[in-house]
Length: 439
Image 1 (cartoon, helix red, strand yellow):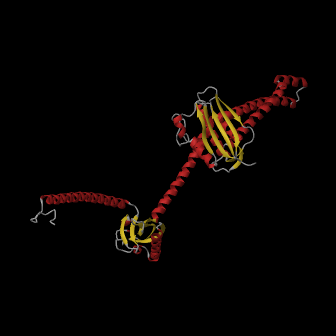
Image 2 (cartoon, rainbow, N blue to C red):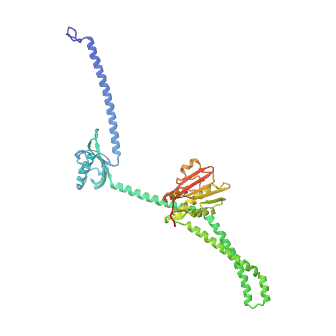
Image 3 (tube, rainbow, N blue to C red):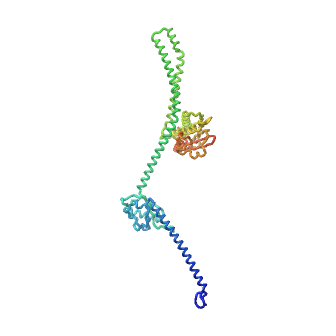
């Protein structure tokens, strides 16, 4: 039979030539498309290589890639900076040539372990640099192929000296932060006490003035009795003494003498009580943790704030039974003083201003509520009330540290300070402290 592609004379038919030309065109089009795809992939690969090169060059650690025979395949990162420009970490070199002799075997063992387990290992090892042996913190991880099999290891390291220096700087910064925090706590307490100076001066001035007035009266009474006794000693007759007694009004003076003594005594006792309250408020930041009556401590703190304010505020207390808490009474007084002072400040323009302190127990804790009938905390300010330096008071009227420091003190006591409730009817803060044992 004669093939369809040939006629009887043995030449190709027109249809056959047409099929051949069409096949050639299709093949050429496929080659062109493949070439374009290949060029795009090459461009993408070049871009990826440039990206990887830029990333590796910016890495602050040295980078060494080795095969299963410990031969270096590639290096990168800050290898020149870490080892020096004359380092021996070149492709084809043995990686253990980079470390001191006594650590060659250790490095090989770690690489074998990583390749076998496919788990990273971190070690400290001495490497040879242009400046001599230098300790590195070296992280050795597995290098896997597309099937997940280990083909070698990747070593990433940085000088331990840099890490130690960074840790040292971090410790120094932490110490400075703690010191600054201590200064802030002390300064805020001094600020709190400073706000009480006017009230304390007034509180002391009243009994001292009372003592002074009664002392002045006693001095006058003494002069009268001295005049009378001098007349007695000089031998004056009875009639003269009677007349002098009436002139000096000794009978009335004798009655007033007891009142003057009692008044001076009462004033002195009042001064003594004020000084005792001040002593309770003088606790330093490093006081001892003890069991104390939270209600008594809250009363003392609140009383001192009220003494120092000109705002007419009615303060009430609820929870008369002894509620023992565990902590530092001086620190807790500072918290209460801050809470009461804030309440007094928001009540400055409020008629019928009231502050209510409630102490109660709940499980193994003792709680204190400090509530006022002020306008409440603005909604947008609620999330920030405990942030340092945040305040809703006018400029110059508050540091914004009181609540932040109080919150920190409560946490250090193993307790908490929260904004329990706020709204148009007032605000309530809740202080929680661990319950104390019997004293």
